[in-house]
Length: 455
Image (cartoon, rainbow, N blue to C red; front, side):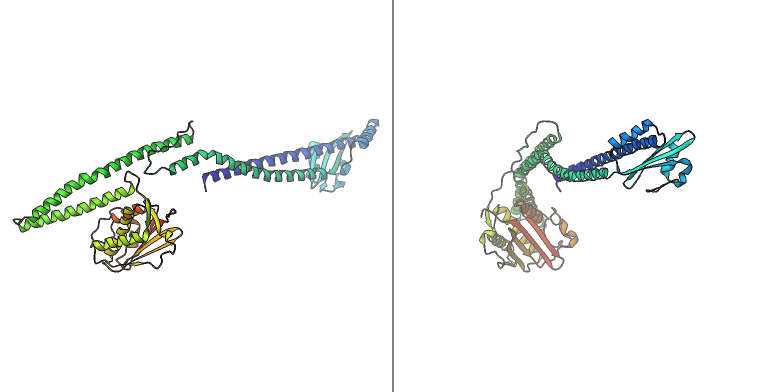
């Protein structure tokens, strides 16, 4: 999941938590305010009922008239009057009796509130002379509960609508927040070994994005310096290292051509000549390996027909090793010739395919090597299968490492740079290599190269 999507989800989750807490707080406050207001209305009726029934007077009669005239009668409103001496006679719907906590609190504190389901109770203790009385008024509040239910629905639907809005706002917010990052990624993708002089736009400010841009440019400066150093080495090493090797080899040949050389001297000069030739081959392989990663200039690319390239590589292997046994199977070639073309450098691709075929012939002791070509998923596939010694499974992961040689290849000459060089070339052409091997049965290497869209 991209960071932009993660931030959108995080923004959505945080906003959801905040909205839930806000809605719960609103609902709780409305709930408390609504019930508290209803209890106050009941307590007012308790006082009026006490004035009318316990302290009757002209004023009480006026209260009663005012109550009947101006105070609405609550739903299921009931008034109860008890002498404390007759508490055992209290039996009110809602589990209100002499032993209930509601009555005990009235006796203890002088007044109390109580709620059972949708019925509210307010009670208060009054004293007249030596007599003590308890007045209780009860009523239900269906309108209040309906308001709470309506509020609950409003909060739920409002929450869902707000979450949808927050999601889209979060996407827009994260999109514009990561716009500079996407611009940096796009620019970095366009920087390759061939245009290391390119730099990212320097952003104003001191935020993290500007720091990232500065860090990338600093890294590119170091990379350009390193590649230039490598380029200078590759350009100069060929001349500086080959010249003394050529002189050594030539002097050894000249010494061998003389007739007055003793047998012991001739053996020494043969060794010098042989080892200098091997050193020259190693040097050529190392230089090719370095050049395949970066040659200091843009490679010359062209459209290459892969079946023709394979045939040329096979002929090159046969010239080097006339005893090689190579069979090219054309049965799987695509009917559309355009699927056989790849874009690349012909010299490098020929070198890579030649290395694979040459290895197959060498490590199979010139037994049959079968080459197939096919096209799948917009890729050209070259399969080279031999019947050779195979590669141990534990060593397969190391065969593309420079100078690595499998444990069962001691009797074969080699330097361990052919396959790493081949892998570098294939990667340079945006391709890949797959390998399957079994000790004693053989090895199959498949090269996957993208089809040239311009062909």
